[in-house]
Image 1 (cartoon, rainbow, N blue to C red):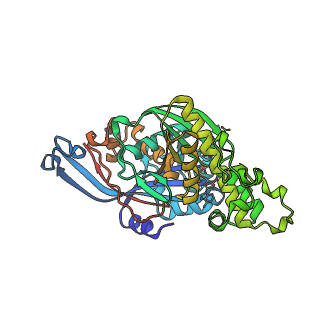
Image 2 (cartoon, rainbow, N blue to C red):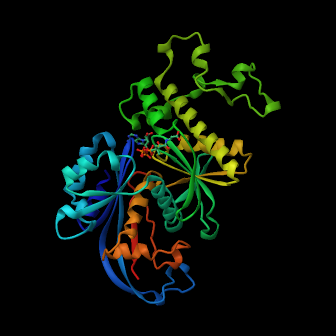
Image 3 (cartoon, protein in one colour):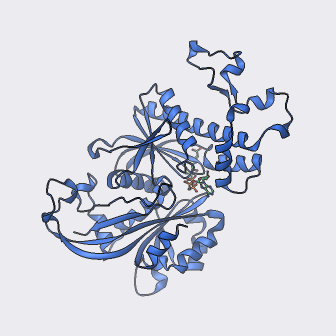
Amino acid sequence: MDPRTVHSQQNSKSSHLALDIGGSLIKLVYFSRSDECLIDDNEGNSSNESLVVSKKCPVLQGTLHFAKFETSKINDCLEFIMRNKLHLGGCQHGGSPDNYTVKATGGGAYKYADLIKEKLGVCLDKEDEMDCLVAGANFLLKAVHEEAFTYTNGRKEFVQIDQDDLYPYLLVNIGSGVSMIKVDGDGKFERVSGTNVGGGTFWGLGRLLTKCESFDELLELSHQGNNRVIDMLVGDIYGGLEYNKIGLSSTAIASSFGKAISDNKELADYKPEDVARSLLRMISNNVGQISYLNALRFGLKRIFFGGFFIRGHAYTMDTISVGVDFWSKGEAKALFLRHEGFLGALGAFASYENQPGSDDPIVRQLVQQSPISASHTGYKIHGSRNGECNDNESIECSVYVS
Ligand SMILES: Nc1ncnc2c1ncn2[C@@H]1O[C@H](COP(=O)(O)OP(=O)(O)O)[C@@H](O)[C@H]1O
Ligand SMILES: CC(C)(COP(=O)(O)O)[C@@H](O)C(=O)NCCC(=O)O
């Protein structure tokens, strides 16, 4: 947990906790108010589209906070929520604390509903996981500055998203498993494919093969490894030559893990770091390839990758980018998201707008958010980075309530 997040939350009023309880991780999003004021947007530069609201409107200054816990440690997560009273800031129907509800998505919203009711005394208001992933992605792509970026040759480049040219796109969420969703608009989407070889596979197989005790340790290990010791390359098969006729360079992987059977080595000679590297490469490559095939199926040029498997990890993003570029012959682009792991939780957070009869200003503000562009909605979110890593990256917000 980022201490800045906790500190900021303790000094302000928190509201609207939303949860995404996945197969591997629980993701939390909540808003804390730091200020409330009235501004006259007409005093702003009217040529700046993001400030086009033609009346005085109250503004809530605050922060969207992000946190995650391993699902297997759900009790730590519930303790964190209780300690910070996050569950009491959401929607309340009637006077009793028993009537508080918290928006939640992911399979765990079903699996852990009773436990959460028992420990926190709140009911979960369940939102569909795919709806939330899409809502979260659209929200980030429209409202948050410098959210999407490409990753090529070790360089991260932020991409300015043209609001009028966002759809259609392919959203690939690499969580425990992988969902591929063709997104055509707000709430307009189809889950077109998926694969069971995803983040859970990397972590599960990696743990079995390397004895690593945490995901971060496995990721760090993969950083130090060399996959060529384990993977069978085209050059290994073709005596150092490329197979040009079918477009394969000598360094292309012909068979992931293939060298581990063809060498005269003892099993103990294979280093865990090389195994971790091969595994990461195999899974990233596979997801990249299936994603590209689905983009091709529907003529989509942009593929946004989310999910906590990516974890802002250079080698993962590089492998996916290179794969998409290679198979599409440069036609399709892989894009990554700064808040990659929080799409579902953000979507659940945004779904408070659908809560009937609530007086909360944030709810009203979200109701009024136009699907066309954040700039015309009276709603603006200022992305302000609190660091380079993708974990728990809070967003400073100005919430315009009209
Ligand atoms: N601290 C962590 N513990 C476990 N898995 C992690 C961690 N950080 C990243 N991951 C990766 O993220 C995946 C889960 O991603 P996420 O988008 O949260 O999916 P889910 O909703 O299925 O939990 C894991 O399977 C693993 O590959
Ligand atoms: C079942 C899920 C939607 C659950 O989401 P997750 O907790 O993995 O983020 C996902 O694991 C998935 O899409 N699995 C792939 C299943 C398949 O299409 O083969």
